[in-house]
Image (cartoon, rainbow, N blue to C red; front, side):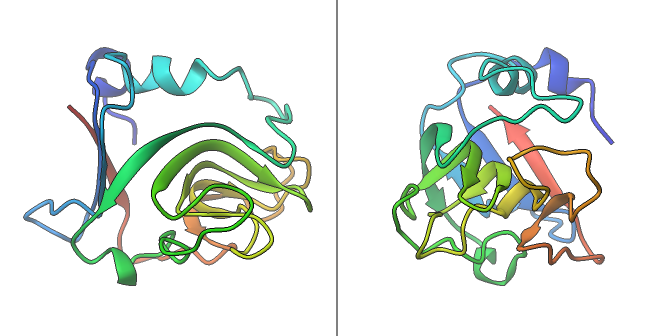
Length: 159
């Protein structure tokens, strides 16, 4: 479910927590990242990628420096948190990423590319080919190479 805050709350920092953690411990948080925009205006500033539109090829459209915390190591989607390769390093939360075989993510956590299981890890993941959604080929809210949990979800915070 998307909160009205998605369209209304402005901020500079991103924080991600797990729904099964009542203390809301940050799994990751960014340094100044969203430029005082709402998350909606920030993420769509990279382009309109609805209805099967390809968002990238062998690259990411943007990134922010990040810090890890809490139980990130046991959280699905963070499987490459400490991997660095030819598509970003472990210290970045990257946006609208794709790697060679067409798998991608809206928010890639950690590194990607040849040495880091391509780009289908993080939040908004797909193996649809040509970095797009809508083909039904392993599109997921979050995960590591199409592995998605059923016991918790992720919360996005903007400050």
